[in-house]
Length: 318
Image (cartoon, rainbow, N blue to C red; front, top):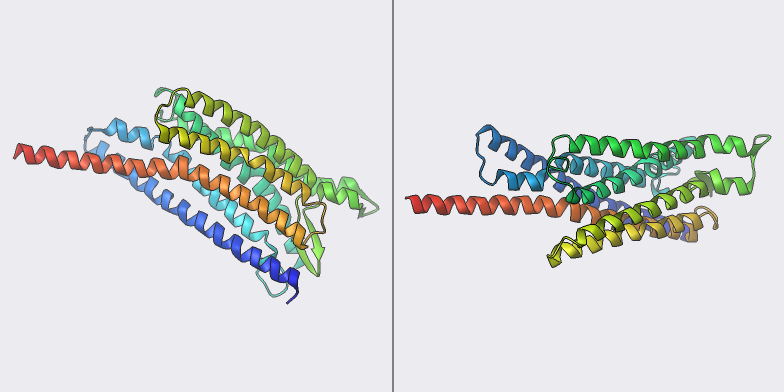
């Protein structure tokens, strides 16, 4: 086996394993969120109000958390499909035309929607801590407004990426031939040793870097406001980790920008893409664990504490 093929296969397997771990964590959070939402609805039907407000506080943005998990799963599917490991002769996608279309779909779907949507949802979940009950996460319409806002904010990036991969190559072509420099700016794929390797157009990386810069500044601003109100060391540590998670996203865009320099499919190119994927995965994992997993786990702690208090009160009554 050729060393480059062996290297890309290893990267492909490791990527699939890491995405599987993120997906399993997401599915666990999804099941717990749905389970706890059903529990609260049963309590309300039974007119059982003890500690209900406290439980609702933890479970308020449940629909936004579920949407976040679904977007993360969608992102994972795109990351798997763009791998050279699953594309090629005798593999999942063997036709070169289909491989090129998958690369275009990946750019539009992941860079245009999944990545911005994922971290916009995380940013809104973080900012919910600063809002009061009437307009914040405990308000019934907060989830719907937040999800609609995320879709609206993602529409410019979605349109931008679609224009880059579908319209850009036609504008840059001269007599049907695209120049080498133009490929850096618009191309979503390149043929290497008979297989199609997905690439990252430079215009996409620049737009993504701009988005991550604005997002990082917003999270730092919101995180600073929360830190001024929080005394608990554990909560402060979570805020610092969230700021770190968004701060490392800008280097991801830089790695993707540098990936246009080496030949697509070579070891240097695959290494840059893999490192940028690792950065994104770490940021996504930190956000999901802090803003989804921990709140869901804490809801069950509150429920268990309430159950113990009820047992104690019943034993005293007896």
